[in-house]
Image 1 (tube, rainbow, N blue to C red):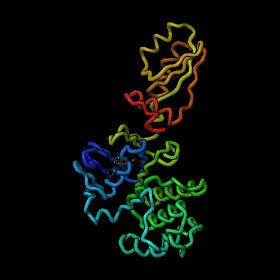
Image 2: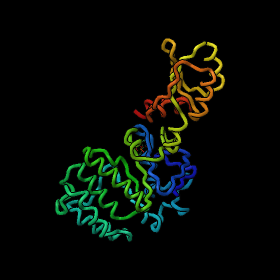
Image 3: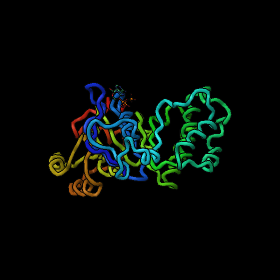
Image 4: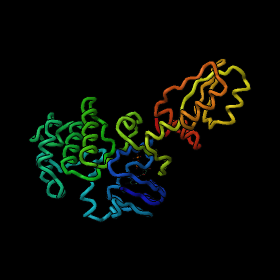
Length: 301
Ligand SMILES: Nc1ncnc2c1ncn2[C@@H]1O[C@H](COP(=O)(O)OP(=O)(O)OP(=O)(O)O)[C@@H](O)[C@H]1O
């Protein structure tokens, strides 16, 4: 379990992360969303033990991360801009990683080679394209067999085939080795595809952290047309309505609650239209955050 407790990080007088508490469970893929400057990279660097918190603490399985080599050996952080020693090949970087990660697995490195077959082991990393460098860093990271894999914008710069490949590799890591993955992204749809938990950051704070399935079960879009106007007033008093739009006789409601609870209340009045429509994660966020008092569109899009 990764735990941040009332953690803050300032640069000069400005908070990049402010009084942030968060638990990330082992074996989950946690997606961190937020606009530019929200504090995502700073949070990832706190998790990786690259930054020391100004206040609060960051622990992995109860052990402080910062300045704790024994814990940091279990963590790999891939920055949004891959960094290598000048003039090195992936084979040379692999030797370097092997020297600092006791869990490095040469067998795994070889097993993964077919997934990264476009990468020439002898080519200098600084001569590779950005997307190829990303692939190379992921290959090295997975070969370290970390407990915690922290990825800053991992999909950025990859072509669609490689995107799918990376997603599959991450799913496989979680399923087979119980790795915990934390990913930052601006892209809600990528996060929806890959993650089971999601957090939204804004101005250094965590606005929301939830399990994706819970979010989807907790809010519904309903289209309804009543037989009598008074029925609408009657149900309004019984439901947690987040948003409502009326077009002619058909109303579209966004309502919090389970499908069963909501359906039961509407069905009492036997409306002549009653449909439950699918909601995208983007819509769920917009309404959920709107309900909490935030206009989430500029935060996410
Ligand atoms: N090393 C640093 N020195 C000074 N200020 C910094 C430093 N790193 C981050 N900041 C500031 O902290 C705030 C959060 O930055 P951070 O890079 O964590 O955001 P982000 O959500 O990752 O942004 P982006 O999506 O643009 O990468 C910003 O205001 C940024 O200017």
